[in-house]
Length: 148
Image (cartoon, rainbow, N blue to C red; front, side, top):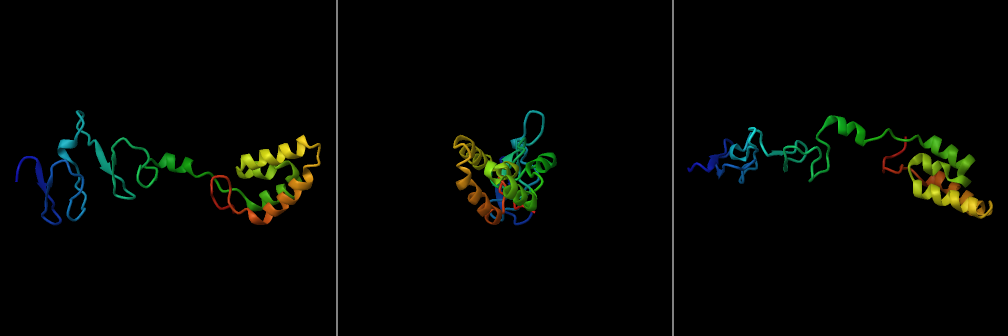
């Protein structure tokens, strides 16, 4: 075994010294010694969710999309919207598209609002049935989260 190689503790396979995991059994190595920055920190690490190799400074995994920093994980998922609130807004203010703004469907809300305003209220004959249909059909908010 040369200076540029290391042996896997799990299976005994010889791997490159810079490897983050064994090529044979995929068991992760703790640190790739020659893959260190001048400060002595590893340049790459394994994602704790998918076990793929990522940059050590990464805040989000490029393979699975998971946030690695807990503060980012909390910000990434907003609180789910209440479906009953969405339905009540659609029933009472559906002609103006307010319910879609609440749910984060801003484009739909803007179309409904403009259709009602620019037709002098006649667009409400289209928008109100549309809003009533959305009361029963819409179950997810603009970010794709299921409404409670």
